[in-house]
Image (tube, rainbow, N blue to C red; front, top):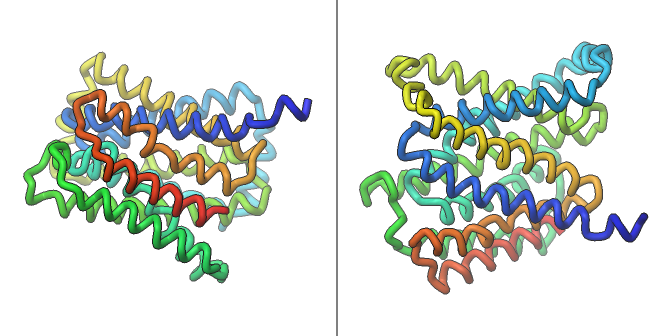
Length: 307
């Protein structure tokens, strides 16, 4: 039985990274027809429904959930804030970054969330930074910066060339808000009194709620913003992509955390930029040796950070 478990966690982590790489390519194409906010809201609704169905299928005792909420109101608040930042805001900024930088450079900028998280954990949780972690941060930032500085034909898929700095700015904000959301979530999950699936459900609810309010407050009417979703093909594409990227990827990540050390899972999960390179090349994107080397350097830095 033990032999059967060897490699299961690593394969699950790689599977999650592969799914997110493919989903990012799809989201980059869908971004031509939907605003980042609407795309995030629609994706979140689908994921929320799927996880809700899973929780109902598992039939967890409702009384335990109510007891936890009553006994841990502060932890509930932290999870909601984590979802608002890491899903409601960060994912919206992520889709905006996709519009400006394209799939592979956006995925690579996402690696910056790891050093951001490391720095935040040092400041908030008083975790001491070791020399190897500082080296990892330097390699990650250097690798990302090297690739981002490369000028390619897909740098600005939807915007003007002068808008590219906005994409980099959105990418930095995406990494920062994702890191803060992850830090808050880890602080609650480390107590071990709530399952990862329930924590994900709470975070999704907060993120979708924030995105919904954000949509309602925008000057454009809600009906006009959601109008593209009337297309059955577009709605089906978003639903299918959300199933694989949010629901199934989270499930695989949970399997990985069950059978493999967290640091290994994070390192393998950071390989998405490498998975996306052959697919990007197949879609006509020029992938240079510089881009491949920069991605490898950045992922090497992440592996040092989470070892």
